[in-house]
Image (tube, rainbow, N blue to C red; front, side, top):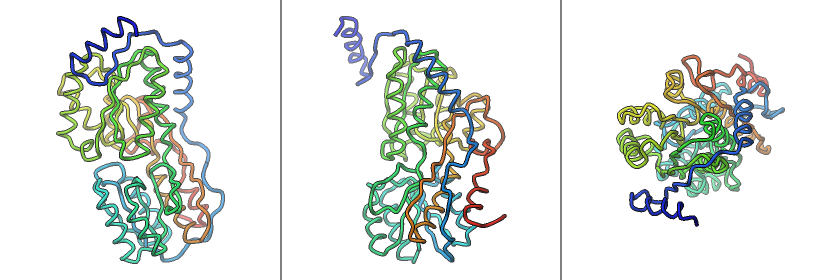
Length: 364
């Protein structure tokens, strides 16, 4: 280890910044910067082609469906509501349950759904490792479970998944940071590793930023969903980060869409309007913040599309068919494309609902 790096490491210990690595500033390889800029241009294109299933079984009739949201205070509410709306289009009877970010509620809700004679269950971003009791209970009673807005689950107790493009989203945000900063960024990554997909996104941000010699990941802050959605907690977290890293912080990566709206006022209270915020999903608040240049980049999650995909997947379970890849896409949005008063995914003009209706043989 060089004397300079030893000195930097020693200083970090004196300042009490834990595992923060103050690597010596270096120039980013021009090839890395060029690749980042090309990638940003590519992933900024909105969906234009149907990537989903080509065929569908006949629509099951009169089904009762329970949709369990990870927490209605988060973006899980959007996936849940869209699944609810799609179920209504098929003539089914849906119910949404608020999981409140609590695994005990997730499992209890699954048991209640089974006992209440639900024909199927859709879990919205409920980590399968945390709902094993509920999954086993549903399997014992032959009630199919769809794992939506999560990673693709290999758990045999899950019928099928409707994943978000977690890896792609993490890569696109990291590449945007490299391109936007010309390869010179001080980044804090806010994490919520209790959700495998959210973890996968942030893992990829860190991994891609490691290819940028002039970029530093200053810290990766572990949060729970209760902490990440609590305004007071996030105010304290941001104040702590600013106190520790000062002007070295130039970018903050939020773990999911609800958090951006809490980081913005915390930064402003700290007098730091220069720090750029990037995040995921694209709820209505994020869109407003993006238009105001308070959130600079969003890796858009097609939340509502995911809900429709979950209903399609559940219909396949009712028909005794295999699960089908839904391939719900993602794209990158910045201030140049943050338009309208709706959600980020609504900026896309591709009519996925019409594609599902055509697939299901219904008209509207």
